[in-house]
Amino acid sequence: MSISAPYGTGDASYQAAGGIDGLQQLVADFYRIMDQSPAYAALRAMHPEDLSIARDKLACFLSGWLGGPKLFREKYGPIALPAFHAQWPIDERGSRAWLDCMAEAIACQPYAPDFAEYLLRQLQVPAERIVQASRARHGYGCPFNA
Image (cartoon, rainbow, N blue to C red; front, side, top):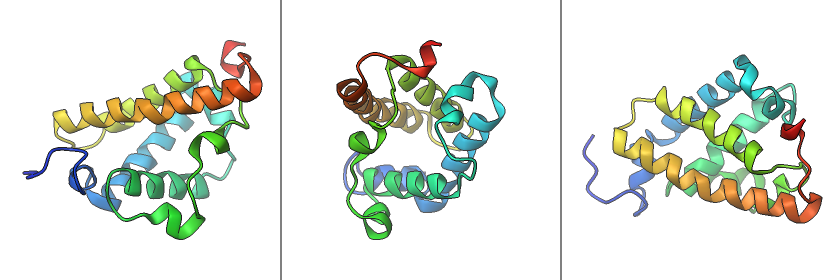
């Protein structure tokens, strides 16, 4: 796929991810890997049994975040990612588990290697913000340390 604008400009990242269909596949693979891998059991335990809404919210968030349609805002209202996740005690280890699971899901996609690397690097930003918000609310305790 030829991208005329660099990733992060306009909807170039959204297009590189395959639009909403590509993002929905990424999210489906992310949660499938989380469900199947014992390495992500603590991460999975933070999610409801039925992942339908979590899947939709993540795909909608990624759509707008990558320069595509602002689907999260349209469906769910304003995005308050760190504030929402602050309800769980998430430290660097928990954040790393989420990023590792996402890296596995990204590897399942037909993305250009430079886009896959770019996407994972960009996902580190909200992951770090979530750790900071959780730390402000919970201190350093985390279920991943058990």
